[in-house]
Length: 267
Ligand code: GDP
Ligand code: MG
Ligand code: K
Image 1 (cartoon, protein in one colour):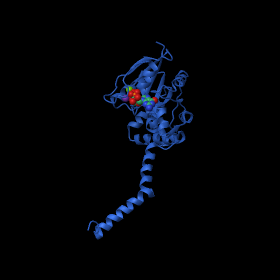
Image 2: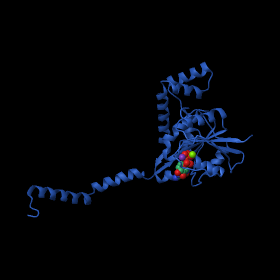
Image 3: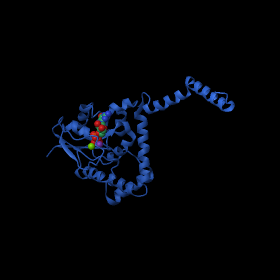
Image 4: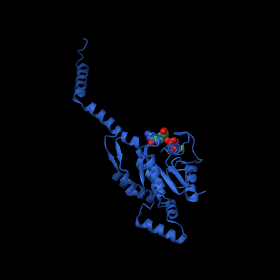
């Protein structure tokens, strides 16, 4: 078969199944948090019949530890899809980009679907997808899988084949360890990083990833309104501090103190 295999990869609840249904015209249950999806679903893309879409179990990390991680990791590494369509919950950008940095190191071409674009605006944020594309060197398309927004542009980017590059330059010590492992064991940079992640420098690698992600997010995320949560706490604060609210409370408290002290009330 000469079909282009596109693997849907992302965190749990980022909208993989919703997008899979939209792309393939299927009708699988979405938002099912109970029980784990450890099987992968396959379907022909209705926008490009030459494209086979594979919905893989949701994962936070590519290290093969849990059942979901093993299935998704093995599919990417052993079956080598033609493209990883990395679905990112844009309302939770930083957490989702952790997996993105790991996926980018596999060497498989990638396209990012910045999903939940509709919810991002409601939360008072804006994400500059062009800047994200530039910073990661991976085409990023804002979409809403549930509202069918941005799907055409996403397919267009997938048809172009995606792009990938090792994104993170680790510190000199880690880079030396990675290079040494590559040479000694004749393995790829991806495997060398995985081996390095397994031993005591794991936290250094995780830290480097988070540092990189923070700088990317700082460049791409803009607050347009006020975050709803922020707005709520601010409202509570302003009500409590408002003179129209504070003055009657003050008078009431003083009245009670007066009554307790002199006990004139009712006598
Ligand atoms: P999966 O775990 O990655 O397969 O995620 P699902 O497809 O099951 O979706 C998780 C939840 O997110 C469901 O309640 C979906 O309806 C919702 N969802 C998916 N895509 C979008 C979107 O673009 N916008 C919004 N607001 N919700 C979405
Ligand atoms: Mg799912
Ligand atoms: K789900």
